[in-house]
Amino acid sequence: MPGSFPRGDRAVRRLLLGLFFLLALGAGAAAWWLHQPLVLTPARMVPGTTSLDLSIEPGTTPRGVAQAVADAGVQVNPQALFWWFRLSGQARRIKAGSYEINPGATPRSVLGMLVRGEETLRTVTLVEGWNFRQFRDALAKAEQLRPDTQGLSDDSIMTALGRPGLSPEGRFYPDTYSYAKGSSDLAVLKRAMRLMDTRLASAWAQRSPDLPIKTPDEALVLASIVEKETGRAGDRPMIAGVFCNRLRLGMMLQTDPTVIYGLGARFDGNLHKSDLLLDTPWNTYTRSGLPPTPIAMPGKGALMAAVQPLATKALYFVARGDGSSQFSASLDEHNRAVNQFQRGQNPRSPQNP
Picture 1 (cartoon, helix red, strand yellow):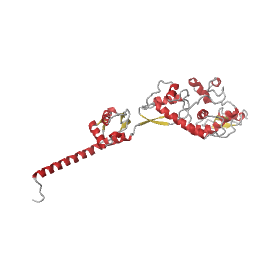
Picture 2 (cartoon, rainbow, N blue to C red):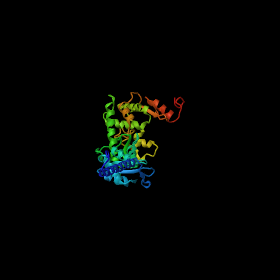
Picture 3 (cartoon, rainbow, N blue to C red):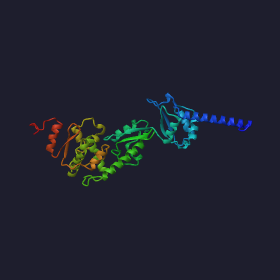
Picture 4 (cartoon, rainbow, N blue to C red):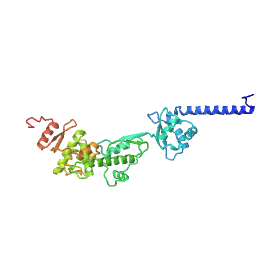
């Protein structure tokens, strides 16, 4: 009859339809599986979180990546995951690194994360005004940062950073630095050092023409003193102006933070008269000019204040007790300010006319 199929053709047709149905069924199941949340093993989770750590070493094959996902604590067939990586056409684009697999992750989202290289980052903060010892302490406590500098002296660290013979003090820019889990603390130090190089060079290029300091290193030392003398941003250019006036006149800087720095571990939290008389390379009460190294790590505000100090006649300043400073052009004015703000005397009283 017209339109009919021979018996053999009908059998082939049924077979093809069956195969098509099976392929469609398999494709649908695969699509469903790719979007299903993966089950994470609680016992393997990062303490205090609901995520799993996943580390992919450089040179790991796609099959090895799939196995690493399973080994991390994801309850998945690594063979199935490997074939998904291959069929996606992106298996060779997977990037090495440290990752976190979070609840709700699917085979599709895991591959996307690995291809995009969305590593899990941690941060460590270097605070303005910190010295190098404090920064080393912060690095030692930073989460999952490899302590390659542990046991190294400051000199050895600077040699490892390519700056042998240079004091580390003040050479690292205060900022918050991100890093992948397992990164070296030397890598963080190198970034902070290079950023300080950049910030210092930029500030020095904008310096006032009549500065009494002659080099970027001297600017760094002065900026570190300004940083330690006040946390009030608006006072920094004025304080830098006072120190520049003193340098021009050959007066001693007589700034307490340099004395405290020179005391090191001997400083007990209170500055005594005997401390001011104890000669160290950083004691600006016993030695003229700038100290030999910075005493802290200055931020951008202190750097700019050091190279663009405010024009002033002031030669003295004293803390008011509210974070700001009182500036004076003469010693008599300064003594009255000290009596008022440090000793609580009325500036108009008979004892302080």
